[in-house]
Length: 251
Figure 1: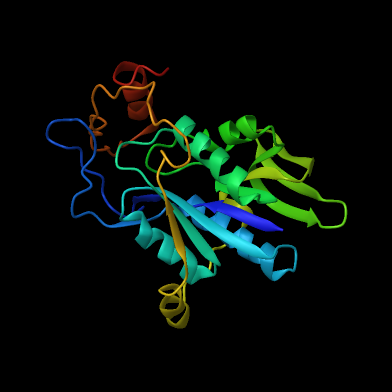
Figure 2: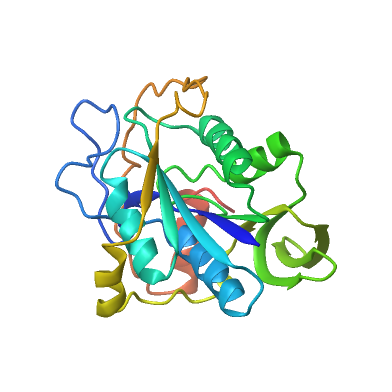
């Protein structure tokens, strides 16, 4: 079985985000970029499934500008067998990404598609669900545990919901999106980083995949959240109640 994994290039989680002066977006020039943390978890799970003998190949896929190749090299250094880069210069929204994945799935014929549940830049949490709908595949979102049955071609997924855990049993092929508690991603070792330089990265364009990139969304303005006021230390319970009642107006 082949596993396809989505990996997205985003601003590193430790970087302080700055809004552009013209408020058209956030500053990405000279900013550290890295793989989306949820995508790291998705790739780690695919690698563990392969190491357990349940899959024969792991293919990492990234979409965006030429710099996405660096993110794919990181995925290859973690252990992916090969990579696919869909070269797109403009903004990509979830539905366009889902259509591109549908086209790649039809080409590659994977038995399992794993994505992070969301990206930390736009927080959309939509691509996995959309691609499952386009493919007509079952989906297990927010996965905290994944167990595959190779003989019966089934995937059992424990998913985190508001009330606790929900267990789903799905036929393969399927789409799974990963949550934080699924695993702890490995670090790429220096020998594997060197090996990754010789691994294959195949390039496509949206036109070659017969997907038209268009957006139904228009970003009007991006602004920073209002700055929080400094906290104060109160000297008594009566003073606390007074501030909550007369200043915060919460009681």
